[in-house]
Every structure is written in C-alpha cells, then in structure tokens.
Image 1 (cartoon, one colour):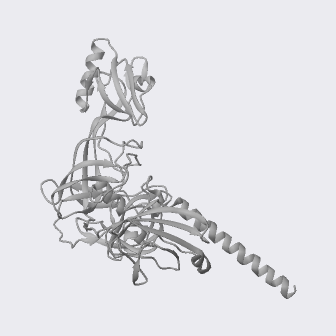
Image 2 (tube, rainbow, N blue to C red):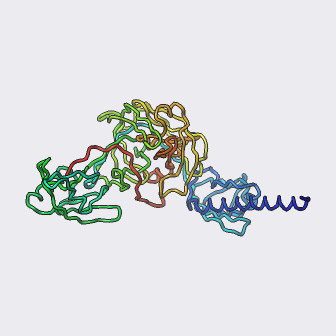
Image 3 (cartoon, one colour):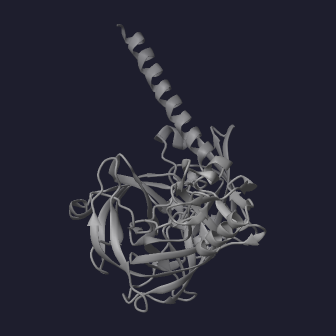
Length: 454
C-alpha cells in the first residue's frame, strides 16, 4: 500500500469515527430531557462528552431570561453564540435559559430549557420504615374456591373479575372493609340475588353481577375471591425537609399485589421498623428485609400521596439520628462512578455502603428509572446478596449530595438494579417546582397482609 492509499484509509477511518460520534451525540440529545435544572453558581453544563474536533464544531446559542446574569470564562455574557469547547456559561442568579445546540453551526440537534434555581438541601434518610396503607376500595389479590356439591367453583372469576381489580362498590354501596364486603355478598346469596359490583381497573370502571354460591366449608355464601382492604410492608425513608417536615420514601409506587395498578389510598402512615433478619437475594429470587413495626416510638408520619415516584407526606416525629442537611444534586450533576447508599440491615442502625452508578438516564422520567446501580460493598453483599425488598428508598449519595434512591432489583442479577433521581422525588414532594405530573404505576415490592376470603 502506497503513501496516498494509507492517507486515504486513515481519512476514511477518521470520517467513520466522527460520523459515529456525531450519531451518538445526536441520539443522546434526541433522547435527553427538554428541561434541565442547575443551581446558582453552576455551569449550564448538559453532559456533552464529544471528541475534541466535534467540541470545536459544536455551536451553542444561549438566550437568558431578562434579568438573569451569566458569565463565560470569567467575563459577562449576554447570550451571544459561542462554540462549545468544554466550558459553559455560569449562572449567577436564578432564572431561565433557552439553549439551542447546532453541529457545525448549521445542523440543529436539540432545544432545551435550563431553569436556574437556588440550592436545595434535605436531610438524607436510610431509616427502615413500616408502610401501612388502607386503600379506597377492596383489592382482589387472588381466587379461592367455593366448595359446593358440584365441586369447586369460582363465580367471581367466571364472571370476569381479575386479580388486580379494585372493588369500589357492592349493591350500590361504597365498600372499603373486607368484612362489610363479605356480609353484603352473604346477604345477597341468602336472598337468592346476584351481587352487583363496581370494579376499577387501570383502563376504566366496570360493572359485574355475580351470583353467590353457598360454601359448605365456610357455611356462608361466597363468590370465590381473595380480597384485602390494606397493605403493609417494609421500606426505607429517602429524605425529609427539616423545616416543612415533608418527606419522600420508597422511590416507586405501592401497587396492588403482583399487578401494576396503583393503590389509591384512603389513609396511611409510616412508623419506624426494626430489621430482625435478612433473607438473601439470589438469581431469580429477590431477597427481603424481615422487620417488625415500632408503634409509638421512633419516626412516624402520615402518607398523603402514593405516586409513580414514591410515597410522600409529613413526619409527625423526626428520626432520632441527627444528620446535617446536604445539597440535592440535579440530573446533570450526577456522574458514573463510586457512590454510597444509606440503609439498615440490622436493628435500627443506618449504615453506609459502597455502590457504583453505572448509568444515568434523565430521559427515563416516565418510567422513574433514572439510574442503573451496582452494589460493590463486600460487607453488604455478604449480608444481603445485593439489592433486596425493603431496600427501596435507600438514599444514594455522591460527592456529598443526595442524587437518588434505590428502587428495583434486576431479578437475574441481584447485585444490580434501578434507582430514581432525587430531583424527581423532590418535585413530586412539592419541594421543587415540577413541570408535569404523572400518575403511572410500577411494580410494588411489599409483603402483603393475609387476604380475606369472599
């Protein structure tokens, strides 16, 4: 191969490399959120990580809101176009900035809005909590056969009622207690009448008429459903605001059993929990914390909201541990690399353990899964095998800031799992202005109370 051919080959390789880099950069920004937050005094950095030549080719237009003060490389900056070379303007005051990214000054890549806000601080949690919820309606969590002379039958299931449904009324009466529901069914059966049920599902409200059958085993009329009017389990407090006493916990919704339907709460509360044992996680089977609830001592609080990003409310009693508030990191401040989680694995003592943040995904706000993390702490791995049930809500700290919370485990790889970004939880809690509301649901991970038979 002569010199000219080698030069052409090198040019082709470099061109392919630049095209791949350009494609990756464009894909990243197409997927990235259209809104970002930074704190006063921070660069308007959006996570660009391009090769140097592309950095020089990247042109950024910054249009600050009137009154917002910016500086670039130490000098006042008033919104002129500039080339991105690894440095961004610094926001000196609160306000809003419109940012437009262009490749080579010609190809528009993304328009973004950057909100400059004050630094917010909260107290990081880590305490084990007992979560108790009473739902609006009766949860269908399974089926139980009605024992008859004809054999085992399932009237409710045969009519079309599904596990995960929420029964909100029976014979025109609102129901919220298991015993009331069972009595209404029995009375309808004694009168040889069908029981009329109004059922809520994720996609709407449905009406069913079910004929109760006499059960020789229970000596009552039943429709063959396992029902429950409450749920309880162990989770972890993520943070609280010492002034307003607002708190956030879990990092994901509490849902109806194995379904993904969010539980609409009638009332609920949190209490401190003592971890008495650990069931280790392994591939294919998540582990869990085994705890008991402390009533009348330790931290307590009311549950006001059960949302896609966790449970939220106000503390009535603060944790006994005195912790100095720390800053909350926004999505663009979180980076891949070492971090720590705070959680309880024995008794009530909050400990810190090493983890690694593998990936940050600010574009996954709808799913609530903004982080992929891995447990690296040998002591924690020996104790739990990885991420386990009850660890949901354990705060993730990096560089002295609250960056997120543990939420889900990878079933087939228990050392890894998902986390939620702290920014999203604070928005949902009402401590930060939020730009949208999402009432989706996710998989709950709570041991259930024993269901009632109807």
